[in-house]
Image (tube, rainbow, N blue to C red; front, top):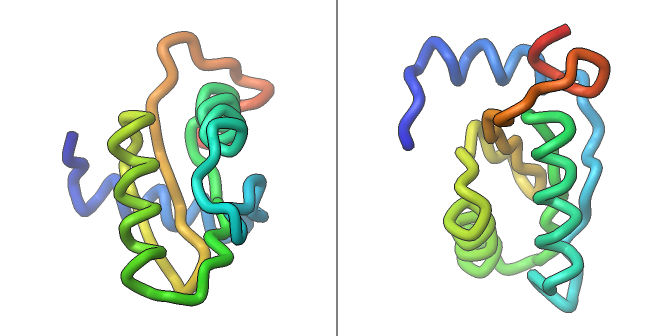
Length: 100
């Protein structure tokens, strides 16, 4: 699943004002963290997540694993914060960050 540069630019613009809703910390990518990211993507479609892991290579692996497990798209990574997108099957106007 690859998105166009125009879409990424639009989502980055929307994501600029978002706060991270999930933090992946020292224990890594646990089942509960994956479930929370899945729920947040289902509700909001576009979310920020903080990957609080100091090693850059491990952090990139964690982001890739999130994208693979949840069928999400990595829109942008800046430092320890990643902007993730996954289109919802049944979007809700109240909770979606991209449909307001």
